[in-house]
Length: 248
Ligand SMILES: NC(=O)c1ccc[n+]([C@@H]2O[C@H](COP(=O)([O-])OP(=O)(O)OC[C@H]3O[C@@H](n4cnc5c(N)ncnc54)[C@H](OP(=O)(O)O)[C@@H]3O)[C@@H](O)[C@H]2O)c1
Image (cartoon, rainbow, N blue to C red; front, side, top):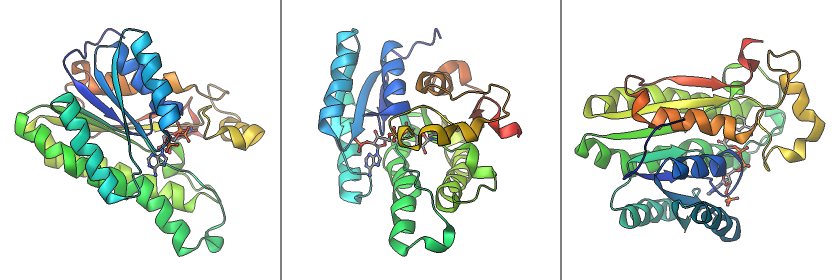
């Protein structure tokens, strides 16, 4: 990866863990000033320290994306720190599983607040300024499950299907102003979030071309490509990074 992101500020939500943290590290190594975010200040501080120790630029801004005030403050603070936000990576998300018939209204709201409402309003807060400057990139996060019929995945899969739809709608809205909006669609990736599922994760990649779990940096590499100028003709794409799970 040789992309040069110097002079750009990148806000990566959910970068205190897993794929978001790997993305924050990679974007910083390519020259971006990265705003690391999440609720956990200790893990956020560790991520920032690691980036700075490697010679990169990063700052942590705590935010609970389920709280619209906190989300608004994150957008403001990231803009203040970076001068502007050029790159938004809507990575933060949750993925509880369970039978549809067991889901409560609170379960529904928790998943849709984190996975749909938060990226919706964070993009609203930041993309218009990118459009006014005529340059910017947004990367959303779907999942291989969004377009599969997996029992127990109703809230998660449908919330991410909404994210895929938003990716295309935002491309139409912001693309003509120079803001590219794309998404990655990961398969099973080994992160802190998926660790509790243990061997159960292997069922997701059984029989797939890669035949193994993916690693966070394998998704981060695609995010870095999508936000770079190398991807300047890519708008509204939803790119699988799933070891071929989507082909099954
Ligand atoms: N891992 C996979 O197999 C896989 C597969 C397909 C798609 N994905 C998608 O990839 C993304 C990252 O997954 P991951 O496995 O890397 O996740 P993870 O290890 O569980 O980390 C989730 C991140 O999101 C943040 N977050 C969650 N709720 C938040 C909230 N209310 N406010 C602020 N931050 C919040 C967490 O920060 P704090 O804990 O600091 O709040 C954490 O940094 C998600 O969108 C997920 O749906 C993952």
